[in-house]
Image (cartoon, rainbow, N blue to C red; front, top):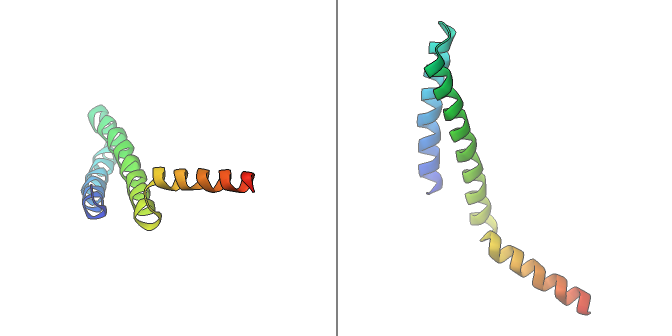
Length: 79
């Protein structure tokens, strides 16, 4: 998924979440409450995915960064 695709999905889900809050403001609806919980979890996941993707774009792949740091650490200990 690209940053643009993530933002598009965040916007779509945020709009739906706003609709659900409006529905719940008129009275409790268990189905709306369950969907809201699920949607909030999905949005949390999307924001995490966006942060991870942006960090990878900015700094490189996480596994590559960790491997490079371990090599540097071994070199420092050997010196």
